[in-house]
Image 1 (cartoon, rainbow, N blue to C red):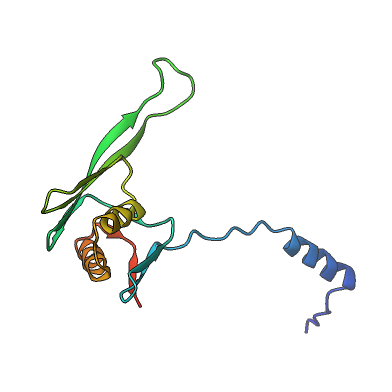
Image 2: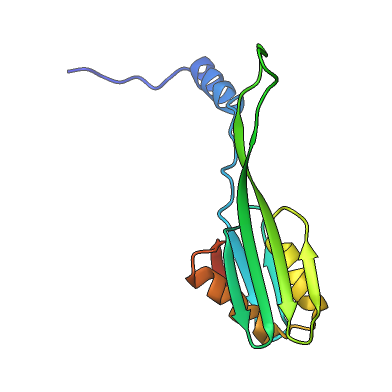
Amino acid sequence: VRVRMPPSADARVAFMADIENLDVRQAAPSAKVVINARTGSIVMNQAVTLAACAVAHGNLSVTISTTPTASQPEPFARVGRTVVTEKADITITQQPGALVNMAAGAKLADVVKALNSLGATPQDLLAILQAMKSAGALVAELEVI
């Protein structure tokens, strides 16, 4: 029969010192968009991404298109690698002719800001974001409060 002896005080202190020195990194948060349907408030984190899509709602139209681009190192370079990125273009139109062109970089914040500048109601924003989510263009969890 083997009898287990409790660890010595020195062993416990060394164990606690090892634990204290562990490098613990927080996991990246999941992409999430929270909408208050009554006030039109939208809160999102930085993990939210948009894919190419086109959405029409009433007299508002949102178009997001992406184009793959390659960035390559100079010929015969000893360092560097080829990286493929995507350039995104956002276009939002309203029937009477109001047009807002967004620069590259499909960010939900840019889409929401442009829709607000065109006078979209909170219900319009909610409907457009729900349609983007249903189409798979909004890569985030959508929570309506």
